[in-house]
Length: 262
View (cartoon, rainbow, N blue to C red):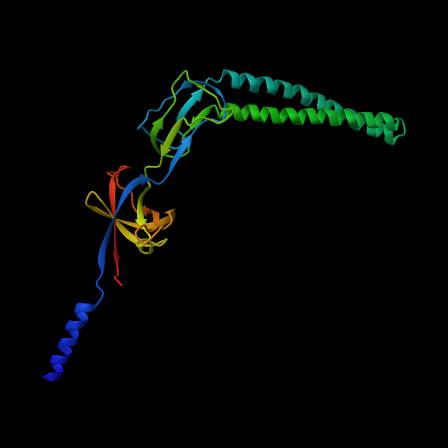
């Protein structure tokens, strides 16, 4: 009987003073994980903007076109010049080959052969340079059309037909495209709680009363500690495991995790 009382008292003391898991809630905000700023690397006048702000687009869908006449004209002019230079290069190549044969038969002087080689090098260099000009003209023509790099939602549109886009210095941002299939949650936490949010740690996020599984993606220092009353502050980014059609950026969220008191 005495042993039973002793065991009961010890168990009661252990239950009283044993560490108990405590739920920790941290306020956060829901955001798109990937938002890309889109522009065109060439200058021109906008002729067509077939998408609107808030619209969902497919990968490869046309977002914007510049007037293509200047780009086509430049490409056609360069192509014509390239054909002429290619013909001249072929002629110089044939002449060089013929002169080498004559030189082998000791019918042609070294000076004449050297002149042939120089003519071929000159024509070949001009042809190579014009090929580069043509590739650049073709690239500019292709880049006068802006294509969606991935499926997503246009969250900002800052361009209209008739607008002149100048890309000489710094190309202006024309669209902001968000990937709606992947969301993150960002929160600011103190140095006292950052230990609970190590990189790769699993936790849950509550959004509008619904719990989502998530994992800590990254953390960065916002402000170093100044005193005991002003501890360090960190920004923590948490990635949701699954997408949900009801999720919208800017919604309040809560990081739900547990800690063990010291």
